[in-house]
Each structure stands twice: as C-alpha cells, then as structure tokens.
Length: 186
Image (cartoon, rainbow, N blue to C red; front, side):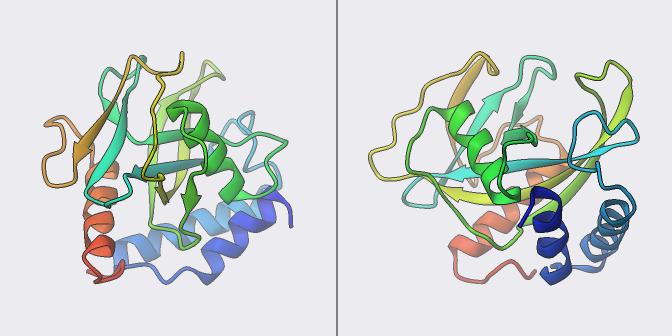
C-alpha cells in the first residue's frame, strides 16, 4: 500500500468523533482522491502532513516541541516523504526524528484531523491537511532535541501550555479520553 492509498484508507475507515471532524474527513478525503500528489510537499494548493502526539508510557504526559518558526509548543510531525511506506510510517518517522526516541508505537486509528494555513518550504501560502495520531513512548524513553526544535518537554495532559492552538487542544482532549478508556468519541 502506498503513502497516498494508506491515507485514503485511513480516512475511509475512520469513524470521526463529531460532525465537524466528519465534515473535515470528507473534505480531506475528496482532496486526496482528486490529487495523486496530495501527500507531496510540492502540492501547492495544500498537502497531507502526519503528526504525532507522543505520550509517555503512563499516558499522562505528552511530548511537545517548541517550534522555531511558529514560536509555540506543538505536537511532533510534519511533511510526508517519498520514502514513507504509509501514513503511519510518516508519523512515526517524524516523531522519532524530532524526539530522538527509539521504539515508538503508533495507534493506527486516526485521532483527529486539523487543517491550517501555513507558508512552509514552498515559500508560498498553502495548507497543511494534518492527519494526527497518538504515539506511545517506551518507559525508558530518552528525548533528544533535534535541529527542528528549540526545545522538547513533557507536559501533563491536564496542564498544556497556554498558547496551544485548536489543533493541539483538540488532540490532547482526544488523548485524555483514550487514556481514560472512553475511546475517541466525545
């Protein structure tokens, strides 16, 4: 299965947690079906990105990166690459590169979608159609800040930084529900 087809498959199977996420699911799925290049960063109208909320082994803390371009704390993740076998591999690669943690595991159920405008490596305004996953770190995880981050820090799920955007806030709320055994449904 290719990166593109795996993104289509995930969105086709996903039971969105609410009507807003389901509407976004349909819009992103339509974009993917219309654009064979939708997972490539050079797709100027917008492109699929893969992000990961990395949870510690207890599920009570999330690893966030202080993003150098945006100047605020965000979940790990970013652009898909041609070598990514599927959307899960893209999210895991990004999480491992940005955290320095080996042996991460991913929940293969999509946690959330978030679409946001950005000027990324293309140098022109575009949109990131972000497929967000929950990823779990092993108990012995040691973090290492990459050159894609100003800082890395574990944050309690119930005490996130004050300047979180809606995409991260939504993702943390879903993670807290999953950890508390209520699944991704509100």
